[in-house]
Amino acid sequence: MQLWNTLSKEDLELKLKESGYKFVTMSFYQYAHIDNPQEFRDLLFLNWSKLNVVGRTYVAKEGINAQIAVPSEFVNQFRDELDEISFLKGIRLNIAVDESEAEFPFLKLKIKIRDKILADGLNDETFDVTNKGIHLKAKEFNELISKPDTILVDFRNHYESEVGHFKGAILPDVDTFRESLPLIEDTYLKGNEDKNIVMYCTGGIRCEKASAWFKHRGFNNVHQLEGGIIKYANDCKDEGLENKFIGKNFVFDERRGERISEDIVSVCHQCGLPADTHTNCVNDGCHLLFIQCDGCKEKMQNCCSDECKEMIQLPIDIQKELRKGKSISNKIFKKGRSEKLPFQTNK
Image (cartoon, rainbow, N blue to C red; front, side, top):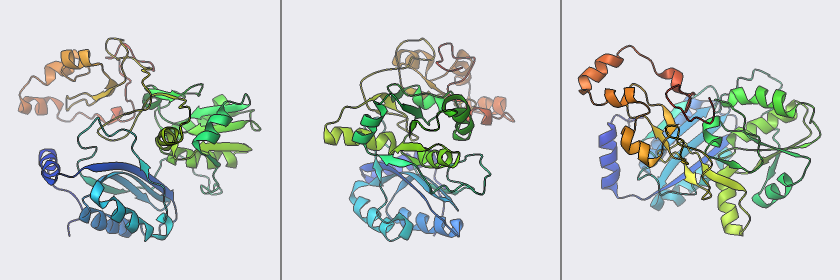
């Protein structure tokens, strides 16, 4: 059986529409020792393809990180098959809070081999990633962050926290997780080794590694929000708890965000009006991710600048010729950072 996808985006969308499936978007991760990541990856691809799973998954010797969507009729079978894998038995599946903002959160199944499931820039062989911090459920989290001797840190990137975050949290201006570890320690935590350190992220994977790292670095009271923002929002709803998260939770699929509260805490990067919807510039030579209101979306035709707007009016063959040999890889981590955008919260 073929172990990768060869269909175009248009064919993938047509295939999903014809299937009639209603997808359940979910994520999970697990740090574990995987001897043969390639063999494990191929096994997952074969099994998940039979269930019509779509999404993006990374496998490494240190574990697995999955952001996927499963047809609702196969969710129970999918969970049963995960339970057959020893280190995934009983794994927590973080179910998406809001499914309304994209017809299909993913178009195809991609499972890739990585050196690490979460790039961290660490090369300390004495560091034990499994020696993690204390997990806090939603109620415990609310109680602890209300105490004066607690430091609450957002372990996501700038473009994520810009559209939504917990009240009173430290929001580091970083582009990547590996950048956040030394910056947060040096700028915010040094000298506070005995205070309550509470951290959160989207689904928990970044905090799992960060909490273990800061314990390794000598911080004594390290805590993390169990299941991240996704589980917190669901638990607050189910248990009738106060939701202390304001705005949107940025997610890494076609929805780009799920509404947690009605607050809009960010602005359109083009006009400055309140907005929290991320757009990828439609110019194939750009694809900058930025915040755009509905008015600018219509006026700018989903582009980040007049230059890109002019570019998409040209015939496709001319567009391809103009961008030949030009790389946009430098924008991968510079989401929302561009001199073309006059109303950036972070520059």
